[in-house]
Image (cartoon, rainbow, N blue to C red):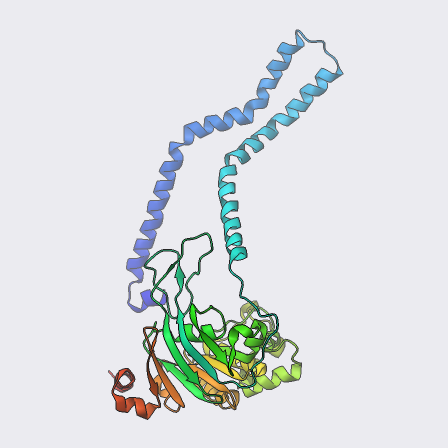
Length: 398
């Protein structure tokens, strides 16, 4: 709607919308009228079925012995006949209900038949927190050939019952070592495989081939619950649940005390948000119009990550939806959040990664370049081209 209004197309699109509604109304009306006579006769015969009972009873009464049983039978059928109308109508719609129920059951079955993540019998916990990707290959499975995967990892993996085809690899043979307590930035064109790569680190998907290890321990040897306490994620678009802010933040650490949650909010520069809420930290998000902006939701998500205190942090475009004020506060919290951590940062805004220890350029699922900001500029490769375009974008003005 905002786009339509911006380009002053409101009247044009409203006319189209109105025309579509009226055309549909006309179609439904004609279709309904075409069944009028047949359906009316059908309903009349079903509903008026009990009217035939009286003449039938009089005919039978002339030849039958009238007693209490005959009278009770007549009353029973007189009362039962109208019920047949309801039964027949339900039988008519039984096929529709059958299709709906089958569809619902199939969706449930897809979930139940989805392959489970293989868990080790005993979790091996890493003692160091460097990360090693070795010859990692991954493709999203699609239900039809030619379907393209996206960098966000939102493709439907399908079910065991559907024919699955692997599209072009989203990650194609990447080998990368990320030292402990370092800041590594992943940059590159959209759809290149950056988000997919970090999703593989959290085992949200399983690699097709290759290995990913933390501190020399293959992530498949770490139980999922332990892995997700080792790797903390701050996604590009975070979700707040319809619970209190206190419980939302405590998703990072379910046994956290009220004092710990408050401290995490303070470190994440969120106290100004809490002060605006009607019940403070106990305000239930989403009730009575209680919402926050995208940038404020991102700050609350960072508070959640602070509370979790994972040794590895993944930041996926953490400032993407923030305005200037929220971006400033988010970057301030990074000094606390990233202290003594192994950090992977995905960014399209190149100014936020110039101080990274290593910048990795991911393009079409491959590792195109690695190095510091200065080193990559000297090579005059893909990163230098992206930086040049970024600078031109900043300098552009009307």
